[in-house]
Amino acid sequence: MLKVIDASKNFKVASEYFHALKKVNLTVEPGCIYGVIGLSGAGKSTLLRCLAGLEELDSGKIIIDGVDISSLKGKTKREFKKKIGVVFQGYNLLMQKTVYNNIAFPLKIAKWNKEDIDKRVKELIKIVGLEGKENSYPAKLSGGQKQRVAIARGIALNPKILLLDELTSALDPLTTESILDLLNDINQKYHTTMVLITHEMNVIRRVCSKVSVINYGEIVETNDASKVLDNPQSDIAKMIMGRE
View 1 (cartoon, rainbow, N blue to C red):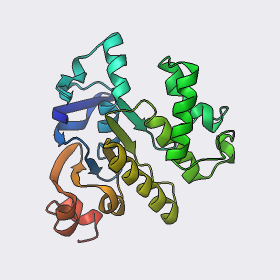
View 2: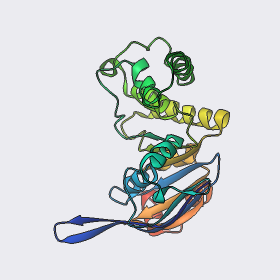
View 3: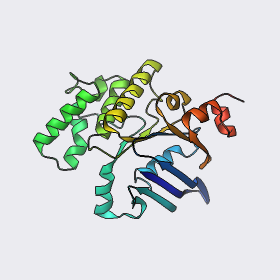
């Protein structure tokens, strides 16, 4: 289980502080695809970076399976972060490496042996539907194929939690559907818990069971995805869905 308790994060801009997160609270059940939706600048990506351990909270806690990751340091933190996979907006692929080597990269960093790396990479290539693209470079791939490589790399170490940052924002509708189908398949087959950051309500509708709405760093609404979609309570959710 993932729990975020009173998480706050500030950034200093010139001589003033910008409150990116204000006492955020979330509970994500195991195996859930949990959506966090909001407009640009609402605090979504800051929340994801804190969940991934790329930013430290100023106050509050992030607890995964009973462990407060915000208190971990050094080697202990690096080892625990292997339980968290991340798929960034913009893919973040290594442009000088093939599909195979992009997916193998986190396994090499984790010091897997060559035989196990080869077995796992081939398994992942099949899972994400990239057979025949093993030796291709990112520049030769479509946007959807790049996203599949990024997803394969994100789940390479069998993470307990997969964090997804605006993964469909640069994709056309048909490709978006195929990527969302892939996420559903991974979730159902491997029971991977996912936290999906997005500003697209159709993404929430297609894959999320629960959703929180964030606005100016605060969670203003949390409920089952269907309830938020059909009967939004917060002004910002109503605006995103064109209800006012």
